[in-house]
Length: 177
Image 1 (spheres, rainbow, N blue to C red):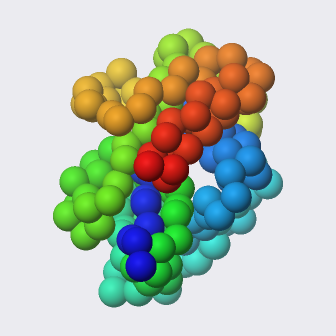
Image 2 (cartoon, rainbow, N blue to C red):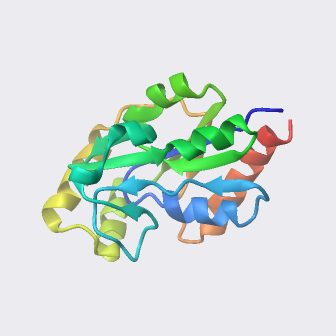
C-alpha cells in the first residue's frame, strides 16, 4: 500500500490558511483536513478541538508545538491514516516543519503569503485577538524566517477560490503522480 501524503500549510496569522484548506478539502476527494487540538476556548472562526493546558499530554500527539502561549497537537490517528495511504492537510507552525518531516518524510510545505498591512486588517476583522495579541502576531510576521516551500500561494485576494484553485493544482500534481 502506498503511504499517504501530508501537506503542511504555513503562513502568518490572518493569511487565510484555514479558508484555503476548507476550500481544497471540499474539492479534492480523499484529502482530509486535520482537526488540531488547541489549548484555547472554542471559536466561531476556526475549527479545532479545545482543551485545557493541564489536559494536553504531548504523548497523545503525532506532532505538537507551542505558539502564542497555546499548545497545538495533531492526533496520532493522523500518523495511522498516513501509514494506510490517506492524504492530509494541516495548518502548522513553521517551527514544526523539520520535526514533522523527520516523523513523516512524504510531506510538502505550502506557504500562504500576504502583505503585513492586510494581515492586520484580517486579524482585526476576525475579532479573536486583542490589540496586544495582534501586535505580537504582526511582529512575528515581520521576523518570520524565510522558507523554501514546495508551493507558495498568494492569499491576498478575498476570493478564496483564486488561492484555492492554485493549491488544488499543486496537490493534484503530487497525489496523482
